[in-house]
Image 1: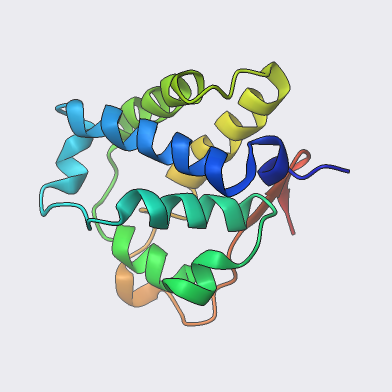
Image 2: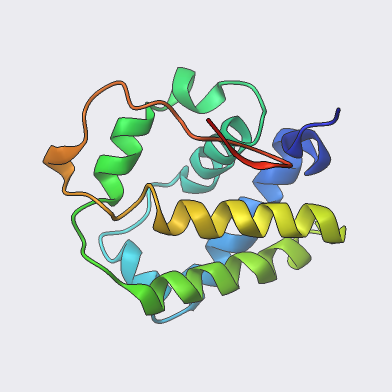
Length: 146
C-alpha cells in the first residue's frame, strides 16, 4: 500500500507543502509570532524532512537534523495558544491546496496529522520534562501508529 509520504509526492511534494505553509504563516500576524526569533534559513527543508519521516518516508530528519526530543524541546514551554494553533492549522489547509495536494482523502489525512501534531506532542510539556530517546510519531492512512 502506498504511504502517505508517497501519496503526497515524496520529498518534493512535502517540500512544496512546507514552503507554502511557511509562506502563509510568515504572512499571518498571529502565527508568525512563533518565529519572532527568526526561522532557520533551512526551515522548510527541515520541516519537509520531518513531515516526510513521520508520514512513512525515509529517516532524513533523524539522520540529518536531530531527534524527536530535540523537536519537542524546541517547541515546548510556551503555554497554551489555542488561537495560534487554530490559525496554523488553517494555514496548513490552505497550503495543501496551494501546493497541489488536492485529493480529498490525502488532504484529510494530512490535515488530521498536522492538527494532531500541532497540539499533542508539541507545546504540551516543559522542555526539561522531555526525555531523550522519544520516538518520532508515525502517521499512516489510519492515523497515529503505536
